[in-house]
Image 1 (cartoon, rainbow, N blue to C red):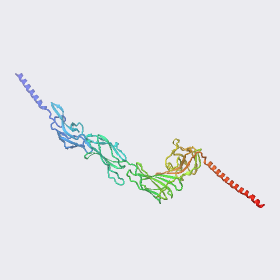
Image 2: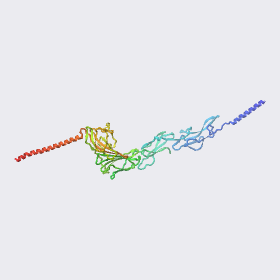
Image 3: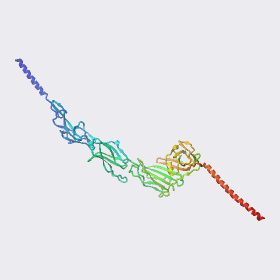
Length: 498
């Protein structure tokens, strides 16, 4: 009996212990703020994504299935424009589902999908600055849309950034271009040089995706239209050019002077003047001199078209044609291919350099003469004949006779033999260079190498002998006539005496 009582008491104590243990370990309560717990509050906290995102409505907590609108600053677009609070089963615990809060985004097909990464404000349109191509008449750029669905109906336009005004008037660009696809190239229509344009790409009704102010490149300027000569001072003046096609950085003048006293003299001056200079004196200003003036405006793109004027100092309103009369050469030997040129130095002390070039050209015309005087002729090249070439470089200090065509070499130049049957123009050229100007002064000689002729000294001797012979014959005829008359008169006198 006692044993049974002990067993009963042991069972009662065991049951009470088990009951107490069950009270000490209850099932945990779900915490909605901890991931992996049963859903209770059915709300979501404000997502901690890009700080540039704008949420509507803007609040800290959102109810389940509450739709939220996302937006960004102008030119940017969120990867999802509509999101909503939701939940999903994370796991099963003790036979019960464990939920966690998630956000879902709406696709272009209106489907809701789980957002698995941060939503960011993405630049909708990308324009690579390295792809920008600017010329004097066009602007071209490559664009890429990072969200093709949002880039539909894009419009592009190029407009003057500010209204134009005289003297630089530019026409407004009309029309707009529709951009399609994910990427492409925008080319603005023909534009004006050195003009600021606004390039804009936008989405209707008023979302600007890209805007840039671009100045087109410079080009060469128009030619000057007004140039006049002061007959009293001999100074040229011109009206300054406007910076319509580029910033005017200077003027380039080419002045060709021909002397009224010496038709073989030619001086060509090439000047570079600053943009502030609009006046320049004519070189060797003296009565009767003739001038041809070419003036060009210069921008960073180069020199523009030249305006050409002709002047004569004694009659500036009615210029006369410019004549070229080169000095003749008579001492020519076709058989030897030589000609003797009597040279006189052009430069006089205290001229810095006395170096003269002897230039040979195969022609007798003014265009060849001017081109050879102003150009950069090369040494003689037998494979490029006929051509203009430098026969010699001379350090002239006084008059000298130079034998052209004797075949000598010196200082890298070849004094090649002259060809029978060719017409030659020879220039003695002196160049003076300064910081602003280059002056090319030339004296020209012309002659023809006629095959079969003897050298000039022999030709002169033959002519002299012929003249002497004619005179002797004439004298003999007169003497014979006188003597014959005298003989006839003697018999008649004898008869009278008898």
